[in-house]
Length: 609
Image 1 (cartoon, rainbow, N blue to C red):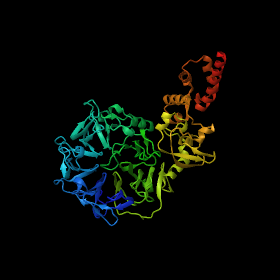
Image 2: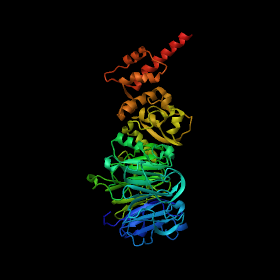
Image 3: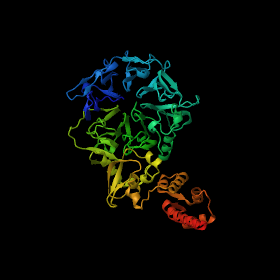
Image 4: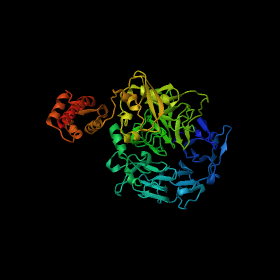
């Protein structure tokens, strides 16, 4: 960054040894008068890079870090930074933080690391030695330039000379991409994203989660769009639908390509601000920035960290609603922070940048004044000046702002964004769900919500439900329990109220399904019908509405009735379902199909007797 204006750091979350939740931003007093350029957050410590190239560190002081991460507290109990040791005269250009480790890259592309050396995560080829002072990592090729480094819990990945990826540290889940599992790798090792060594890929960015790694790359000579590669721990869908048998090797994430093609999006070529990322990983989830400044998210959704309004794991990427034109963002263990640019036309009425937060909030890491989880992005309205950057640790968050900006501790409201519209409502996240279901624009069926959840087969039911789930009470229909799918398909324009209940298997309670008029009920015939619709049309609207071209009618009947069909059966259906549009809907098909074949079945039973 070349901005010469003075900036400072604000922090919130778990900021001291007592583990108390700091639920709103506080200024880091130890940096008063300094110009912070970037920051990084680890599990219990943070790094701040100043414009002069110095690195300041604050956080928990224990083990090997006692001499380095010296801790001080203000009257409020908040830690403030102490200046870090020198880097052999090198000027630092960027910093990164792992679980109990710290990293810095100099202007000439050399990497320094210090902290706890467990699993050889420091990369010094000295076993698992701890380092209380920064030491240069010498495992990279001579004259190479390290451009970016990212940290998982106990492994690291580095981008060297724009097209080489090096990894080191723990490898118990294959997160190093070596093609096998091992305890650790003590020195940086180059990996190939594609088996063909002649396939030279240009790497745009890379990110590391707790035990997985994601790389965004492109074949520059072919002019192709960017592709995502992932490897490591396959649990919680964090790898995005790759072959789990090869999880220890880099694999192309095909689901993101399908999603980008369907939504007509592309992965961002670079962030809107220098040295910012376009991909970031939490413990088990991943965010990727698109050219429109929106996010694609996949992986674990247990704490709402995918921002999609539910608690499901997602193998296929979803678009995070309500956030666009993102300048910079960061992922913590189970929460996310994003800075969005405000349109110039509204610059006089609103902040130039807006901070969003969502996901887990047990320690106040979202900075929204409470400890309630957020299932969708919520606007942080406490920083009134321009934002330069942000970072997210395990249980805390940091933001760089260009001027002093605070808020009253007793501010009673926050603004929560729902699909791009902001309205002043309670910060309690149940209200987000209630308003989301009331919004008429939610009439379309989201992925995984095509059928009434209480009519799905047991194996499919368990895969889309979690310990707690959102349900609704429909007042016009006098139904006290309506599942999420029926709320979107059958009760879109009704007055409903959202709540959370504990879901247990074999406990069907959806009043819509029991009413006999449910238009979202699952059946094996309907699943076949919808599969035909999906395979024979490219329009997402037609897929969700269940409209099938009449040309596939005969083929559909043959699949549903493998025992055989007569020409009379096909002719009867074509006559009964004839329409000028040449298409049939599921409702019309069901109205003809079920009575017709039920009559044939009864006639066959009579003939047998």
